[in-house]
Image 1: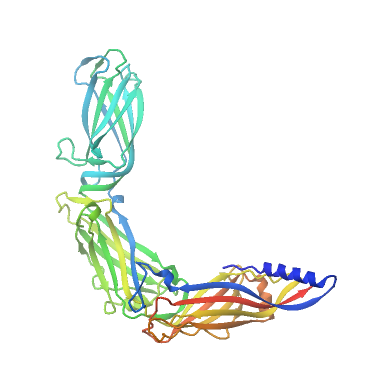
Image 2: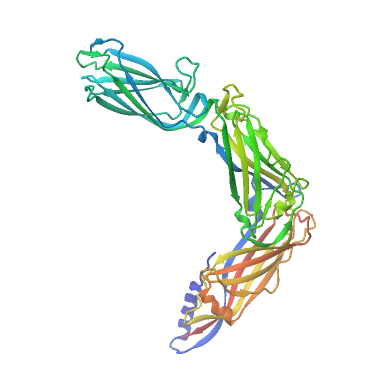
Length: 525
């Protein structure tokens, strides 16, 4: 928070000019109080369904409910960019074609490669195809391109284009684009028994307003189709063997300001799960779960089932009523080293995983399914009371200021910084300040006279009494000289709880503070 003192200087100078009239070389001192920082930590600002909740006795419950990592399986099973060139011709040596006659009406099959995946059906989220039609006969022709089995809202995909005439060496060329968004593709071919097959149908009609022509089976009508960026959101068949292995990092910036001390956590319950939203079975393994704190101290969380391949069942339901299967790892104070892991106060968490889909082959008989909502998630859930003890827990925070102390008419000679606090947390706070330059180098350190006292529980046992305190920091001449180069104030707070454990925090707890500067100003005219 940035508060400038220029307005105070301007006002003061105007008063001086008005009062001094024609006096020369006049000097006197004046006291001014300037607000510098006004901030607060109000716990009620953090209540929601996935962070903090309030119990019946007004104490606070930590409820952490987050996806640490989420993978859309449609990004794994992809339709490849493919170009298909298909020639069409009549089956007779020669054919006399009057105006308006449909003389080609053929269906072809086109093979898509999905690696070892065998797909019977796919839904397209987005993607297009560029179609180039070549007409080798000397009159215009009407080309209708259809894709049997490619359906949207019950209607088969069809587009029509008229292409000018040409020759075999220099055919007439027409272009059009097909948008496949929202279409479902039947990949079972003409027989309905195959897989990875896209059907295409070309119908060619001579120009109804043209002349009669003679064509032969040497005249090739070519359809060149280029599929681009087809992304699916639904697939059915055998998805193949899919292996996913990685480490994801989660940063908790709230802990970046902690630079010392420790906490003591009470009863903690944590659940880490791998959630499978695919209708296909697999194996899941957690290979790493570690916390790194401000001292770069790393604590790896242990669990008896880490580093083991565990069965992941297929999801149940379909489309909008999917019920993902869960591979759950539960922790409490008796499981591994959870207490040490939590008390490490990590600002970085790394989770390693190894997931395999269909590790034993096509056990579903081609009934694997990816739905639009199908994802594989790493999910963390925690639920425990906020009753943390603190032992010299040290936090740093920096605030921008602008106290100009280099004016030849007006200067700060001395004074004090006054920190007014209103605390209803069960933690006492020892505070110190430092003046920093623009590079965040320390210019002067200021020691406090007084401290913030921990708030006691009220008589109703449903909250804390507010403790109001005023802490002073003396500004001497050397400190005042440093003000001209000061761009920031660093606040260092050391927290200690009344008890090692069982320090309940209530719903209305808050720490509010106002930092003011009470300066003795020297004015010279």
